[in-house]
Length: 94
Image 1: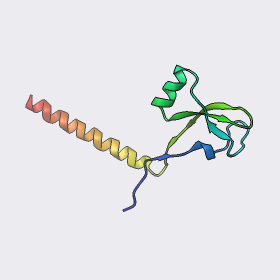
Image 2: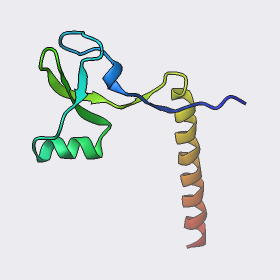
Image 3: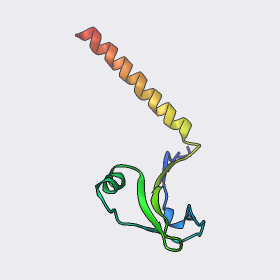
């Protein structure tokens, strides 16, 4: 059985800059304020800077694969059905 990777962790350092399209010029940038620290710690976005053009912004570090989207929907459906069944059982017992 093939293992489906639902989420793929990627490194944007090897991606092209969104502004100047140069490859390999992106570097991680330090958070400057509380908003940027919150975004870096609690989301899938991290702050990056381009060495060539000076662009600074957020890029995703985790992406959802197209093949695994169906598997993710199936998992969410199973969780929903289990929650409904559990709720009905508890409703009858109480």
